[in-house]
Length: 509
Ligand SMILES: Nc1ncnc2c1ncn2[C@@H]1O[C@H](COP(=O)(O)OP(=O)(O)O)[C@@H](O)[C@H]1O
Ligand SMILES: O=C(O)[C@H](O)COP(=O)(O)O
Image: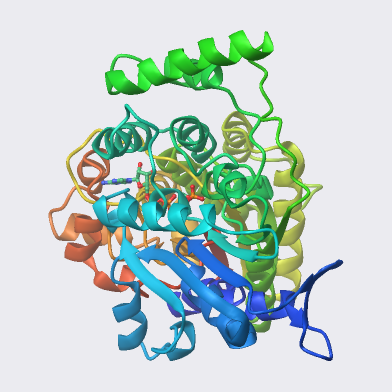
C-alpha cells in the first residue's frame, strides 16, 4: 500500500473546502437579479456593492463573488498571502484568480503569515474604503484564517513592528490561536468588531471560512465583524499565564493597562461588551473543517479503508500529540486479532493506561478496538482521522512546522514502541500523515508530512538522529535530507480549515 492513498485522503479533504465552491453555494440572486439572497436575508442591489477580504482563502472567495455580482461591484480590496497568485497561475488554478478587469484589487503581503508593511498598507486602505460607506451600501467582507496577519492596524502607541514582535513571541511560546487573537483584538483597530463598526451605517455581510476549533466567529481572523467580549484585562492575564509579561514590547503593556483603566472608569466593570448595535451585520460561516473531515472519511472508504473520525478538536503540543499517535498505532495493531475473551497481555494493558494518561478517553479506545476487530474480520485496513490545531513551543533554531513535528514525533514513538515488539512491524503497515489544509506548515513550503514505520530506520541508516532534529525544531530539514517523498508539497491550497491527521493500520496477512 502506498503512502499515496493517505495523501489522496488528505487532498480530498482540502478539495472539499475550496473557497469558490463554498461561496457559490451560499450566495444567489433572485429572478430579477436585483436582490442578493444570503440564507434568510435579502439585500437590494443597485451598483452599491463593496468587497473587502483578508485571509488565505479569500482570493477564490472573491472570484466567486465577482462572478456573481460584478455588475454591482463599485470597488473592492482584498489582502492575500505573498506569492499566492503566482502559485495559482503556475498550478493552472485560474478559476481561483480574479479577472484582470475585476474591480476588486488584490494586494499581497504577510510573508510567513506574519504582519508586515504591505499588509499594513492594505489594512489602511481597507479602513479608508469601509469608513466612507453610506447606508445604502452593501459591504461584503470575505474572511478566512490568515486574516489576522493580513489586516494589521495597531492602535497607537503600538507600532507595526511591535505588533509583529508580539505575534512572534506568542506563537513561538505555544499560545493558542484563541489567546493570540484575543491579544490582537485588544491592540488593533479593525479586529474585535472594529471593521463592522467603521462600516456602519452600511450593511455588512461577512462570508467566513472557519479555521478554528469550535468555529468561534469572534476568533476567526480575530472577529473583525463580530462584537467583542474580550477585555484588555483578559489579555494581561493571558500574558501572565504564559509568563510573557516582561518579554513583550512595553507599549503593548501600556496600552492594555490604559484601556483597562478607561473601561473600568466608563462602565464600572472590565466586563465590557462593546455596546454597539449589530443589526447591520450578517455573519455567515460558509466552510469549516468538519466538511473536510467528512470528505476525508468518504475518500478513505472509497479507497477500501474502514475510517473513523476520533476527534475534530485536536490540540496541544504537536510533538506530544505525535507521541500519542505513535502509541495509538501500536495499540490499534495489537487490537486487530485480539479477542475480547482473551486475557489482555500486561503490555497491552499498560499501553491502554498510557494512552488514557495522555488524555485519550477510554471510550475512544473502545471505538478503536471495535474498529480493529471489524477490520480483522473483513480484512480491511483502518484509517483513524482527526482534525484540529496543535501548537509548538519553538526553542530550537531549525525550520519546521507543527504537522512535520507531529509526524517525526509519531515516527519516533512507533519505533520505540516496536523495538520490544517486532511482530507489529512484521505484520502491519503503519502510516501517519499530518497536514495543514492551507498547504503551508509554519514557515515551510509544505503542508505537512507522511511517515511510515520505516522512517526512523532510514534516518539511522543515514546517520541522522531524528530526535536531535525534533529537539531543534528542524523537522523540515530532516525530511528534506531523508526523503522528500514524505513531504506534502502542494503549495498554497487557497483554502484554510485547520490541520488534518490520518493514521492507517493495515494488516499484511
Ligand atoms: N521551526 C519550527 N518547527 C515547528 N513549528 C514551528 C517552527 N517555526 C514555527 N513553528 C510553528 O508554526 C506555527 C505557525 O504556523 P502557521 O502554519 O503559520 O500557522 P497557522 O496555520 O496557524 O497560520 C506556530 O505554532 C509556530 O509555533
Ligand atoms: O490559519 C492561520 O493562519 C492561523 O490559524 C491564524 O488564523 P486567523 O487569521 O484566523 O487568526
